[in-house]
Image (cartoon, rainbow, N blue to C red; front, side, top):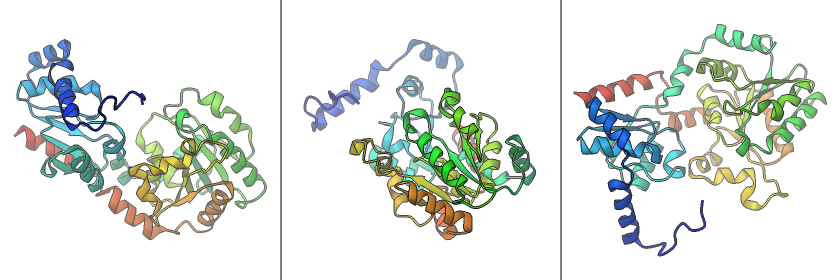
Length: 338
């Protein structure tokens, strides 16, 4: 963010509304988009992202043509981290009641325009199959039944602290901290194009397997998570993926005192969409290496620990985890077209 934001008159509601009116009048028009919609004459425009300037020309063109707009909230963090919602939306579909409350509270969208459908990508989790899980494990030369700690690496920008953690995990595992036959499976982030330089060394460590970035079907991710003994992640939505599949999960919330306070990994959990998790009983949080090792040991000893808390989090964050989110999206589209 630029330090110039908010200058001048940072608290002027009049200035804010004036700039907003200018921004959403003609400034964001884009000729090719106007011509596309005028030639196509759609009955409905669906915006899969509603908080990025790149979709604004489509919203403005549709509004001028009196075409209804259906918006989709991309993820659980977007109402509080991704800026203003494009105006003129006829309806928005969201993952859970928390996102709906935030769109109403922070963006002024009428509650009756926000419809709950659940997490589209988690429809795959209702179709987990044992044979798919076994197939995925064989890709990493792991036998079915192998106990493993799944370390879900973040993108490089947010995970600079993670290679050191994996080194220490591997050392603790080699020293017998987790028992016999336990493997550390390091899953590279799907968008980590430099994964070989960042994680290639880890495959040389004893008891460590590195999974290259996988942009394949979500069933691949489902299979790997569902068979894990515990899932570790630094403030990522993959913690919710684990909760969806009732797998213990640990949030890495490092209080690295060598870093400035606001640069520490733990500060990610000050964000609104993550802060609520800290007071939950459905997942553990590690502030340093000893607490991470201890939490792993607990879950490796008993995978059912915190199951009741995970059930509460599923109800709160995942709405209806029944494989029907796509069907509910279809129903919203059909209703708007009719």
